[in-house]
Structures are given as structure tokens and as C-alpha cells.
Image (cartoon, rainbow, N blue to C red; front, side):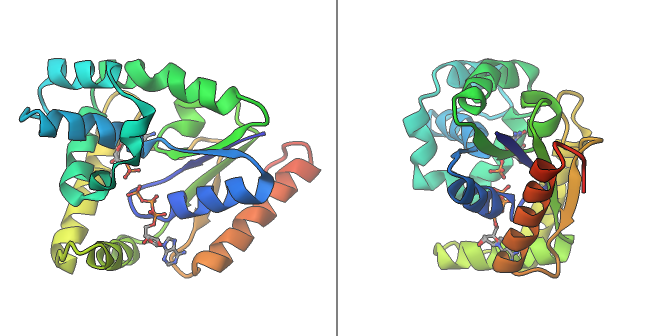
Length: 213
Ligand SMILES: Nc1ncnc2c1ncn2[C@@H]1O[C@H](COP(=O)(O)OP(=O)(O)OP(=O)(O)O)[C@@H](O)[C@H]1O
Ligand SMILES: Nc1ccn([C@@H]2O[C@H](COP(=O)(O)O)[C@@H](O)[C@H]2O)c(=O)n1
């Protein structure tokens, strides 16, 4: 089984996707970490994330071990990731890797922006996870604070809105809800409630052989 989980920044899709993978015994891939790793490689080499040649070279040289670096979680890296992610040649360089991961038995849960629309349009279950801008900014603020990166709420909100706009408005593989994806708004759901709702949706898809609940 392949479960595609897409949504805007800090909507909680990674938290949900990781738990769904554990619950159903599937592998898990945070595809955002691939774009973050490409961006971090460019930044560490002293380059500009907008330099397409540098970003494409970093994408081709990407090693999965690079996606474990704690430095990936910084807000500067998130911003740079959305710049390199707008480049079709960067996306192309890491597309097959994501598809191979998804199609390795027994299947996988992948979270990102284009999983249901481009990477795995054949996924059995497609979730589009969202939450209001304000709720997402508050969650990200708390997360950054806990990691020792104190960024004010206003700056975090601005950053999320700007990153989402870049992700939604790019021409290649933009962030959008697939026509056959189920919308899960977690604005008023804590992590446990969001997980229970997602399990309900997945089980319903499986019981009905793919009919959207
Ligand atoms: N339903 C929820 N209620 C409260 N906090 C949540 C909820 N879901 C996730 N969080 C918290 O919000 C933060 C962002 O969640 P997460 O990293 O899963 O989002 P994401 O959509 O994967 O973000 P990104 O796309 O930027 O990687 C984390 O600190 C997480 O613990
Ligand atoms: N499937 C994906 C996943 C991510 N991106 C881009 O990477 C940025 C960082 O992703 P996070 O999930 O870690 O926040 C994100 O803003 C996107 O630009 C993508 O394009 N496609």
C-alpha cells in the first residue's frame, strides 16, 4: 500500500505520515528532507540556492544519509529548499528515487507537496493535510523554540506564507490538493485526534476498495 500525504508547511503532515507508517507497518519518506538536503549542500558550499547549476549538481550528488542532518530543520534551509524545489531539473533528479522507495514492498507513506499528483498518482490513499496559517505558525514557533532557534511568531508566519506561495505558484509540480485526495484540516485537532481521523480515512479507503470516504 502507498499512502500519499501532501500539504503546506508545518501542517503536521510529517508527524501524521510517520505515525501512519508505524501503524500500518510501511516505510516512511519525508520528501521535503530531500529538497532541504539539496539546499543545505548548496548553502554549505557557499553557493546561492537560486543558482540552478549548483542546485542540480547537488541533487544528482544527493546521498540519503544527507537527509538525516539536524541542520536541515532550520528555517533558512526551509526557505532555500523551496527555491531549489521550483527548478524542474532538481525535481527530475530525485523523482525516480522517490518512486522506487514508494514501490518497494510492502509499500510506504510519503509526505511532501506533489506526492499524490506527480510522484505517486497511483497511491491507494491520498491525504491533503492542512491547518490555518495562524495555527501552523504557532506550531512551528514552538518547534523552533524547542530546538533553540528563537524566531518570533510574526517572522515565522511571514516565512510560512511566503514559502507556501512559492510552492503553490511554481509551474512545475506545484503544491495542490489532488482531485481524489481527502482533505484533513487539523486546525482544531491535536496530534492524537489527527492521527485517529487519518486512520479512519485510510481504513475506510481499504474497506471500500478505494472509494473516497
Ligand atoms: N495536530 C497537531 N496539533 C498540534 N501540533 C502538531 C499537530 N501536528 C503536528 N504538530 C506539531 O507541529 C509541528 C510541525 O509538524 P510537522 O513537522 O509534522 O509538519 P510538516 O507539515 O511535516 O512540516 P514541514 O512541511 O515544514 O516539514 C511539529 O512540532 C509537530 O509536533
Ligand atoms: N514533495 C515535496 C516536498 C518538499 N518540497 C519543497 O521542499 C520544501 C521543504 O519541505 P518541508 O516539507 O520539509 O517543509 C518545501 O517548502 C517545498 O518547496 C517540494 O517541493 N516537494
